[in-house]
Length: 251
Image (cartoon, rainbow, N blue to C red):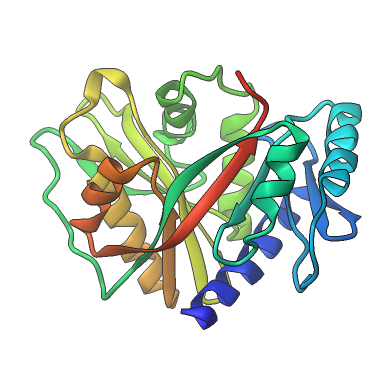
């Protein structure tokens, strides 16, 4: 398990660097997105083995406020166990999420009638709606440049997008995986509120798994919202290996 968590730490450090600048603060690294899109966060610095203090967290938070980005931190509890006390002492609220890794090739559920689940390319007519779906699913206004940004990342091979497309050609559910070497994370799987409880999220995730495996990815992982969602992903072959922690300001 230590080897698996080490691979994930290397991935966590690498994947934001294609869209963000990294600012080093000793035991912590702050990623600041360059351009529009989902904001990033601070993480433990790759390879750091010492402690992290509330003062370290405070310095990063001050820089986040100065940069106009959310005061957010993400890390794996089992890899950096001392960080939780530091961020809580700094005044942030910590939430726990199951960190899950795929075992085997995964199971592909059938798509509901009237829905086609497929990968979406940079020139696909479904791209604009597929890029917007996760924003709508999480109640966030989409970036005006969202479709163009996703298209550019698809063209560069940084992101691969799957969608469940309805009969009218619009995406009902969409998600992405972002490979770095032999590791890829499934992210941003979201379903329109009107299309939920139809199994679309699992079908899209299965399509992303198949695409990742076809590209030679050996380790596919994701972070589930909670234990009930983790049980759903368990149907595809994902198993909880650790706890992902997200710290933010109290809402």
